[in-house]
Length: 209
Ligand SMILES: CC(C)(COP(=O)(O)OP(=O)(O)OC[C@H]1O[C@@H](n2cnc3c(N)ncnc32)[C@H](O)[C@@H]1OP(=O)(O)O)[C@@H](O)C(=O)NCCC(=O)NCCS
Image (cartoon, rainbow, N blue to C red; front, top):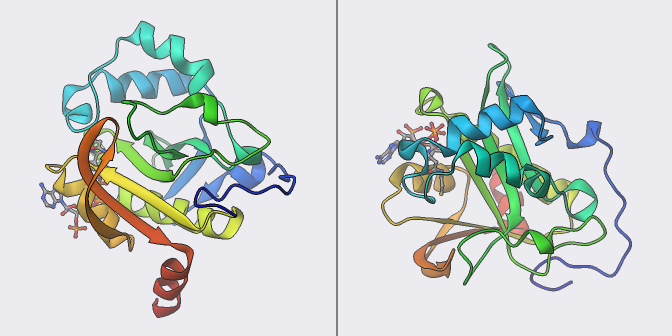
């Protein structure tokens, strides 16, 4: 297996039910692209406060147009975007991802996301929540669950993450989830802070409780 976790073995697709991930307070479901998911995307990506450290804002039309692309899933369903729903209120509060990390591109290369194989790229974990949900540990809970999924239900040996140097909240989420700060690296066509965790590091952290 290479750094990307790519494997020549046939990938067994996971069932829709196996791609629904539970945490004590959240349910993560594959982004379906229905009206509800579009409303969530509009809430997130038209808000300058939410995208401050990520990208420019998008219009509702642009978000609707990209929905058929961003609902793609790779590696038998294991790679893609999940919506994050609060169990207590039923509200969709954000999205969380396992996706190929763009290096000299400023956005995900969706051509790498195909059902029958792992992307030939490093895989990143990420999350975006609506501001009402910030500061309650939800991003940490979603990120931890995706790491567990990545190391229990995929063949990936390492998960990466990157943040804008100014995004202290996200850096804190990543270190709480056990990722190491690797210094400055290229990603999203920028110099940013890199983070990573290997399968062995995740297992050690898990054993320590
Ligand atoms: C980054 C983001 C996901 C964090 O979500 P969240 O649910 O508030 O995160 P959590 O509550 O799990 O943890 C945040 C931690 O950072 C801390 N924090 C928040 N703002 C901070 C700041 N400015 N400086 C340092 N720490 C900060 C919080 O206190 C908390 O730590 P604690 O649990 O030890 O108190 C959320 O702010 C968000 O969606 N931002 C916009 C999108 C984004 O930037 N995504 C990340 C891209 S890399």
